[in-house]
Every structure is written in C-alpha cells, then in structure tokens.
Length: 360
Image 1 (cartoon, rainbow, N blue to C red):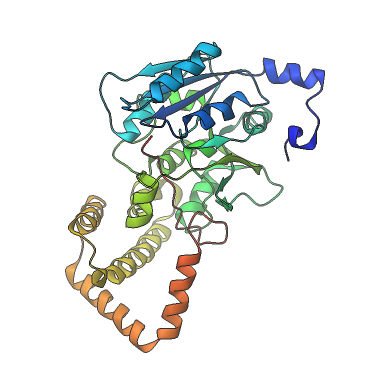
Image 2 (cartoon, one colour):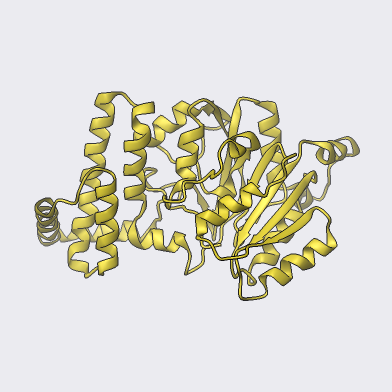
C-alpha cells in the first residue's frame, strides 16, 4: 500500500531525495484521448518521486485532447505539449514521443494515455534502477480491472540477467515484460537508435526488451504500480481478436532465438510453436473469420519464413472438428477455461501474453 494510503508521507530527508534524484522523462503519446487523459496526467502529478518532466505528444486529435494537455502545461512548468503536424501510425507516435524526451533524463517512462501510474511507481522503479546500475529495464505488476497482469520474477528476487529472462520468454516460460506503461527504460538505450520501437511489429515493446537485454539486466518491483485501460478500438483489442501474440512470438524466435538459444533448442521451440499456431488457426476455420484475419496470419507466417500450408491447415481443422465430436466434455471445459482467463493474467500460460502498444 502507498504511504498516503497508510496515512503517512515521506520524511524530510526522504522527500529531499525524491526531489533531487535522477531526472525521469515521462512521455505520453495520445490521439483523441479526452475521456481519459486527465486521469493519466493526474497520476503523473501525484507521484511521490517529483524530479520528472513530462511531454505529451498529441497525434492530430480532433477532440479536446490538445486543450486538456495545454491546460495542465499552463499549470506546471514540468509539463510540455507537442502537436504533430500530420497524423502518424501508433507505434511511430510512441517513437516520436520518446525522441522528444528530455536529453537530461536518466530514465524514460512511457505512460499510455488510457493508463495510470500508482503514486509510488516512479519512486520504486528509480530506486531499484539506481541500486543496480546493470539494470536497463525495470518492470512491475500492473492492474487491469480487477486482475493482476503479467508474471513477475520469483519473490524476493529483484534482478535477473537479461539473457536469462529472454531465454525464459523464448522457451515458453513466464512473460514478465508487461507493457510500455509498466516498464522504466534507461534513457541511454532509448537514445541509442532513432526508432526505439520497431514500427513494423505490433509487439515491438516485447521485441525492444529482447534487443536491449542481451547485454543488460532486467529488474522487477514486486508491487502493482500501474493501471491498464483497454479501449474497444485499441491495438490491444485487435490483438485479442486476432491472437497476434502467435506471430509475435514466432518473429522473436526467428530473430532473437539464435542469440539466446542453442541450435537444437531453437529448432524444437519453432516446431512446437508452429504446432500451437496451426492448432489455433485450425480452430478458426469453421468460425467464419473474415478475409482480414486470414490475410493477416498468411502475411505474418510468410514474413517469418513459414508460408501458410493449406494441407496442414485442413488436417488440423479436421482434427479439431473430430476432437469436438469425440470429446465434447473436454472441448467444452477447454473453451470455458479460455473464456475465463486472458493470457496477461498470472494464472494463464505465460507463452501467450496479450499486450501491445495502443492506439494512443
């Protein structure tokens, strides 16, 4: 629980430390976010750690988003607003926001416009990063509705080798990275390239962790520090509908597997993952998924070097139907389990995280 919830604030010495700590550059990319932007900004203003600056990047909103952002900027000199001259895609705006982070910042904190930070978020994350200079990315638990999202490192461990946590991810183990809002990035890795996030990859947040943790450690705060909002028109909603984690993980296996896995391990994991991928696609054949669905997965498989096999898909679909007919009880129970859980919940299979950069 936070200090304020417990009814006491930081002492004088601790308050001075929170005000004089390293600069954290917070950024929020936003498009048409008038319904939730105030809550997002207020959550940054409420931070117990106060040495931050805040850049809000408006992506050509047609609602009152820029007015709300300017209202807060007029009240607090730490807040500034940038309005794009032309609309850019979602992930491109995340990169645009990060490029506008303060050059004096030691850490970068993304906050999606429909998300919120709990008041100790920056304090706890910065403290861990400062205590462990080898850590380049810090994660924590997030709250989505009444659910605690994502796995964490085994308690009380707070730091793990980046190579170890990436191997765990690729081998089908626990997913600990969460979302950009739930992570704190060391600013030097953000500045190391023009586009921090791969703009061609819906799951570029996970990919960035794979890229930069090869030579750095990963830290984790065992505390809920963020609240995630999900909009019906968001990429997160699209991800759930199309199960985009499947091609996302396949891309990571093909791209980063050679860095973290042995040849035999990698071949085995790719084969295993493709079986899972085809089982999912086979289950969708008789659900009348539209053209967009099949074109999306056909393109992703081809892009990863595994073109969609029509014969294999037909056989998997037939097997799925036979399984439904011959084992109705087991199939029904499996359906109920899938409906009751989402892959970003702690009790769900960690190889199926559903998180993404969102439409803001």
